[in-house]
Amino acid sequence: MNSRYGRKRIQQGLIYFLIGKGVSAVIGVFTILLVIRGLSVEAFAAYSVLIALVETLGAISGLGLAHILLRYVPELYSKQYQVSLRNLIYGSLGLRSIILLLAAFVAYLFAGKLAPYIGLSNAVLAFKVFLLVVVLRSTTQFLSQILESTLHQGLAQLGFSVATLARLLGMLYLLELGEVQLINVIWIEAISDALSLLVLLIGVIVVVHRKSKDDLHSTNDSNWVRIHLRVLVKFALASYIQHLAIMSYGQSTNRLVGGSLLDVSAMAAYGFVLSLYQYMQRYMPAQLLAGLIRPILVSRYCEHGDFSSAARMCEQALQINILLVVGVFAVFMVGGDEMLFAISAGKYGSETLPILAMLFLALLLETRRQQTELLVQMVECSHYLILPNVLLSSSVLLAILLLPSLGAVAFPTGNVIGLLVANALVQYKMKSVNFHFGHDWFFTCCLMVLGAIAVFFGETAKQLEFSWYWATAATGLIYVVLVFFMSRKMVLNFMQVLTGSQV
Image (cartoon, rainbow, N blue to C red; front, side, top):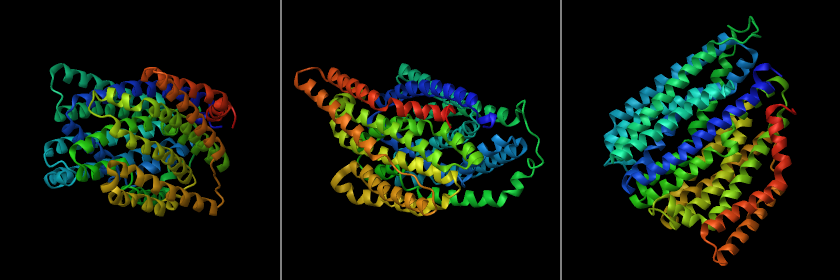
């Protein structure tokens, strides 16, 4: 295997990855709890809507450039084409930055007209200031993808850790002053993202100009981008279209539509649940390891052309995700009401549990979609995602129809139905061109049974008048023990394949 994606670098990247994500997760969760507890219900409802602007404007300005980097940076880096790597990265970064700044500028000019459409008629200033966060955060995400694609996890995680630590210190400062207002929280976000951007930009510059001891000098290097320009443009166009097709799907759109159609208290409750959900989603293995798994799979596929190996690895990552989601769901079944009430300082409680339960189901299906998308883009078949993504985006229309009867639960319900249809369609399209991948339903059903057993013991403990936290802890412990005996070999095998101990 190429030394740049060899066992030593993967293991080193995994260590940096786990340390960095662990630090970011702990600090990040603590910080968002400070935001939830510090902001008023009305201010947090507005904050929940503003967060969606990052993904929305990022998608509009993307032009498929991020997809190009995720697919071709590992290939160029493994071939050690330093000149082409620099040209591709700097060209993509420059073009995307121009389009992103232009989109943000237009949004700023028309802020007074745009803000009321998403329920922010009383927060136009916050809307304008948050556009700075959009530009900074979207750019940091772009830079982090470059570093992750080259397995420089230490630099990538340093950038994220700087941002999360600065955000925490800023929130503590605001709490000390007693000035936890929406506009102040946004400025803290902007400063934190600016620091992260500086660290990541320096990291990217160092990486693209650094030469390893075993650099190979090829005549194809300086000409690679020019020779493959037509392929790059075609891939970017297909990726951009499929990305635009899916823009109306997901939590960002749900936040924007919810801000317009839900009342303030319902939107605040929905935003609270989404904040917890998205942190959990971010730190689930399939999502968490995407930045590490993707470049490894792409580099191995370019070297060996083995699709089945990549499909097995994605399926194992999905099963580990399901394992954790079922465990978290079991814990919330027993002690969720009390936990949510305690976390939010009494602002939100049992009314948010149905939303959270449906989001858990959506998370499992969304993880399958992400793994499928990774495989589709790896084999350069992004056009297969366009129709499924259009169908998936239409799920927001179903959610709007269900909104009067289901309330905020309508959003994840619509997403679940859309994901079921879209995932099946992509799998069918890939199978038609001999790219087969399936799902181990037996293993999933076994996990569901173990979760049900854990819930049974937890509820029994509550009936025996144990406190809710002891009953919840017992539920989690029983589930962990049961899963350990059932899944340890699968998890160990996944880690061995990931690090190159078996390939």
